[in-house]
Length: 204
Image 1 (cartoon, rainbow, N blue to C red):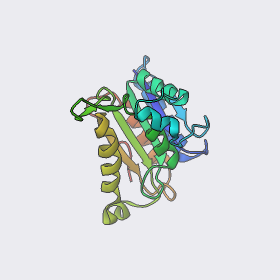
Image 2 (image 1 turned 180 degrees about the vertical axis):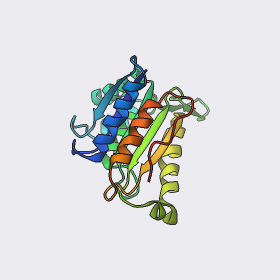
Image 3 (image 1 turned 90 degrees about the vertical axis):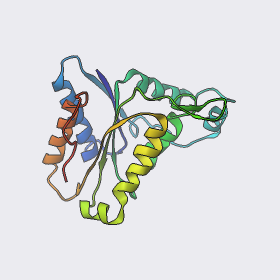
Image 4 (image 1 turned 120 degrees about the horizontal axis):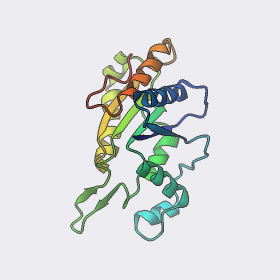
């Protein structure tokens, strides 16, 4: 089984990158045939800006931009998609949001039928979300941030495309807690990516 792990953080020494690597290690330990690819959006210089070319693609007037086609091909090769990202202002970073804006394009991730009914095209793609958050659980619950993120990301993006979100976790208090438990939980997630039921991905 092959997994695409997408990381949206500029610092390769960050906890975000560490979690991604531990997911990969767990995956490889789960089975000798498992493989992964890490898409480091910052290192590869992915342009998150939605341009006239992307707009033209949406309206069926222009071809898929080359960088978007390359990312779509990466996802097409994968049996699962893992997104690991820091939480900025109670959502994902602009770099990752722009990647989704451009890559999850009409005609590839979703479409509309002749009667304008939504066609979800990513039903084969299980998704795992791992957000790295500085705040504690009480803050997320008291203000409704966690529910808002699930509505926006899990439902608003992935369910819209038909991709089932199997894991949606926040690594809480990431700036104050010992990262060992978080890294261990990411390793566990990697080991169970293709299990019928896996353990929780992260602990607060």
